[in-house]
Length: 384
Image (tube, rainbow, N blue to C red; front, side, top):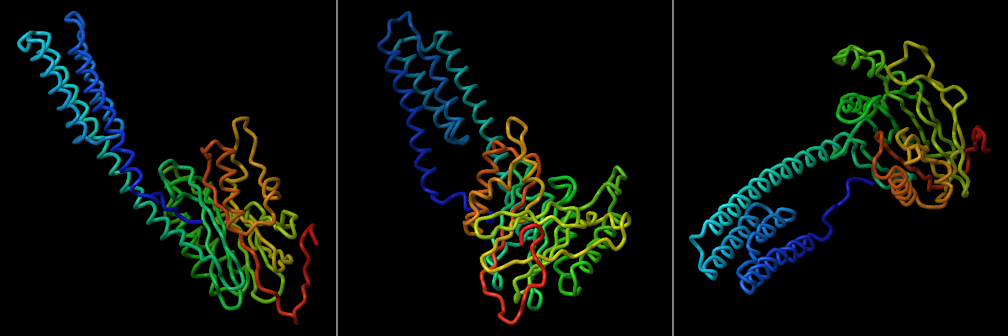
């Protein structure tokens, strides 16, 4: 699930805006007629300021200026009708209405310019996301794939979470990771890891060797580009490396301090915890040679759900964490795309639309039958 099309029906906003224009126009006509037919002691002309003030909520500065000019014209008409155009009261009302209209136009001008700048920033952000997190194919080999990314930063599309899938030989390799921190500050580390993975995945025969290569790349980046606060030792990337051979109902995973994935099989959900998890990438000095492979059965029809901790650490109004395993059990028989959509919508509802951290989801289903001559020598940890 990538960046969505936001303007499915571009003509609807145009029609809505033109319908709203009728409101200040009706107000100008109604106030003018009411003032003309009111007793001399009642002055409704000052209410004309409502028209340009209201227009600022939906129109730009040209439309606001036009409505303001009509309001000023109505004020002049009231002065002529009441025969007091030179009266200080009418003059002061005209000046006040003109100044207010000019002020509203200035507000609209800067607001529109701000919106245009924000639109450009979002466009660049979306382009950066497409370059950093390349759109994943719906099908790769015998796998069906669906993904989702939710950035915690407001008005942002990217952050410190990452995922990538690459095909090498007769196997598919996957990475899901989470850079310590969130937002734009984590993009550099995420880009480094993704670039290293796309290259190293084709040159290392085993997942532990791949994990060690990625760890060296992250350590080198943190050494060459330290943070201003000098706390390089506190920067790391949790990651999960997955390898799915094309033939044989088996998959392999290396846990690098990352939350374990969920295996969905025949309506049941199992957490694939590793018996010996490794430290996050960028901390290999703590436990050299610590990357071990954990193999488990991955049969046709099985689905794997990989995620980052921004999903399970999302809180609701009562500060309760999002119960991911409990929720996905409700949609265990859905397709990967439908499963991801359900989790994304439910997660946002749980967190009232305000995530505390970036959140990424990646669902993978094996669709093709395994080779008949191969037999599984490993069983699912805790769910054979």
